[in-house]
Amino acid sequence: MPVSGQLNLFGVEARPPSAFDLEGLLAGAGQVVRLGGTARVSVVVDAAWRVRVLAAEFSSRELATSWKPVPVTPATDEPPDPEPTPAGAPYLVRTAYSSVLAPLAGRWLKGADKRTPRGLTLDGRKLRLWLVAGGAPDDQGGFTLELGPGDEAEHEPVGEALKGLGLTPVLLGSRAGAPAYRIVGRRRLSRLAELVGEPPKDSPPGGWPLIK
Image (cartoon, rainbow, N blue to C red):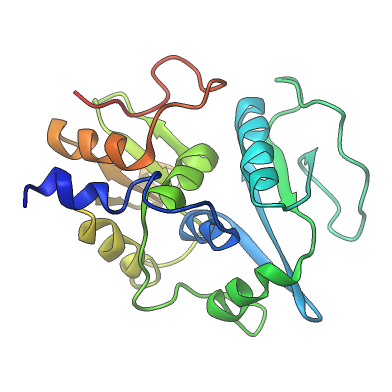
């Protein structure tokens, strides 16, 4: 079977959306916290269009969403702005606490600390959320996926999961800015585009990988 046919099995149309897709945010810079038998996922994004698309993605998974400009005070829960605007970016976007997210917390938390699980797998729906939250083209024709803080060993399972999809990324350390995985090459970028599907209508021109 050709590689493209294999990758279609992991694309956004391969299965219905699930709350577990938010694992894609945790593969990047997202965070998860527990509260009793519930959990909440949050991520800081750099533009209002990302807020709008994430809110729609969360809603499609029956997860309530709030957002606010950062910096924020974690101890407060202010109501979200009625509509995010470019002014005041970046934003903290987060779900409400939900029991359906508790398995993610159990998988990604060691105590109160986020730990990337070994044997992590990714697919198109998880990657799409990651791209919405922290994906961007670079000035050398590649595409970067933002990571959270951590050492190379912590990010290794994420890189292996991307490699398993045929993307074979390059890890960029903090010296290059925020840590990120970079995907480069026409074939790999086309595979990425095939996996994550059509650009969200709010994404800026050139801000989403396209099949070439």
